[in-house]
Image 1 (tube, rainbow, N blue to C red):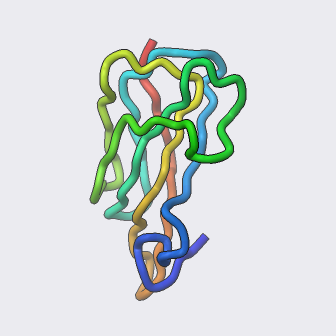
Image 2 (cartoon, one colour; image 1 turned 180 degrees about the vertical axis):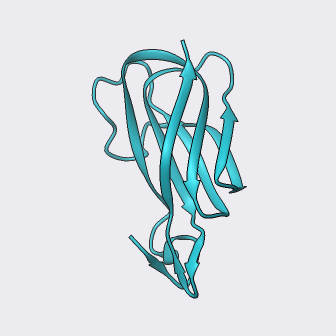
Length: 114
């Protein structure tokens, strides 16, 4: 989607993102993103290890990483001891694609851990 007039999703909502299902609970150490355009502000959130289904909202997710004004290839080291099955990437501010138009794009995600 393209948002108009403001990088903060046009002021319409506090973010947009995706949830990644790792299949089983794993220890997560870092997240690397390849993004289109810059700058992008985003957060990394995780569900509790006991979560039995993919989250449908931010409720119950814990923020474990934040990066503002990110470039197009970024890695975020996470605190020790993060165990989860579900990792959410939440874009909070998007890069400008043309005058007055903003769009975020995640081209690739790499999650490292055990």
